[in-house]
Figure 1 (cartoon, rainbow, N blue to C red):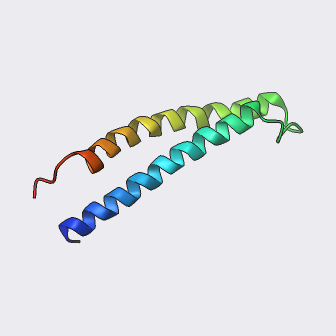
Figure 2: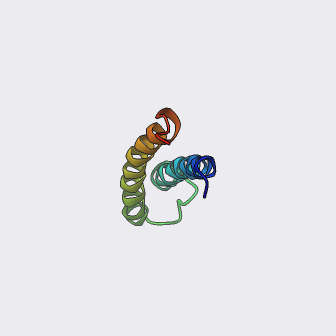
Length: 77
């Protein structure tokens, strides 16, 4: 893949990864605080929400690093 093509691919994947962070954190929020799944036991919802929350935070840290690398650092080519 050419240099500019690779850069565009990295930018698209970075945006997708950031969108997935919002998905994970949003799902954790819905499971913990929404009445959408009120028929499911609170303990079970919490059991599933906490890993989504932790993974979302982990991915947010990685996405922050990738955004800095992909969008704000100059190419060395």
